[in-house]
Length: 313
Image 1 (cartoon, rainbow, N blue to C red):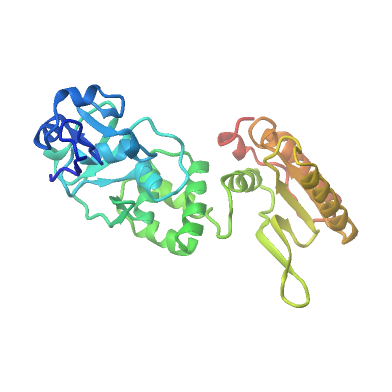
Image 2: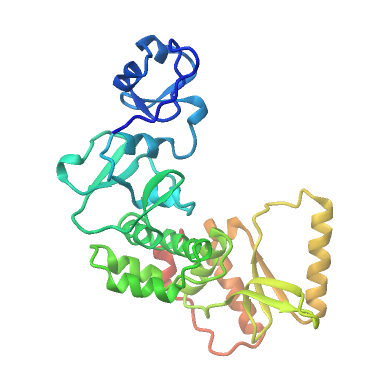
């Protein structure tokens, strides 16, 4: 592999722009003493980078550097490259196409496949395409994290959820069933992972699924309001608020005025915080169910315990 190297004016202190090995350093005119300088970091055993080149993909870049040129970032590492939300990972996922091409390090999770992979290039790296990445992640992520990934994929890459379902059904990958289960819950128009979590809490508890990203317009066609989660038949808005307290007085006053306006127009808004999702999900579900019934929604079932398999009770 041709090293990604660029020399500073002084060959004694070369500036190496990408991942490099000791052998590549020597070939570029550097010495072992260079690595003792404070502006180089060892990212993997025997793989260094200049501090100016360190970013959120440093481990992935270093892992790919020691693999053959046709290796590809995959699974959660591919999601990271693609700008999609996944839990933090302690290692880089790299897929190769021959067993002999795997490189084993504590920080690398190597995968090998003989199947054709849809590969694109993002941020200078070879990476599995968004749908292939989604399916690959199914063996590693929970259902909730998979739907968060799918919602973000649909928004960022404009992939229709029905198309995602079709591609999961057509896949021959081992975890296609888990990918399909998540794809069936993916929706368009979701803005944040917490909106996905709140919606899944509601749906997995057997409550009616709210409308996502509902928009109300003025007579001239301009946007009047946008609701994250909405039950139009009873005018109930379920809204996630990530702030634990209102630090901005002007923002707090604006929120109060907005809620008063919604009340005047016959809406009811139910605000859920992070505590209501992570620590008190049962309380949140009972609040939503009671409000739907109080507002006259018919056919609201008792809570299903399925949600307990995916959220801390």
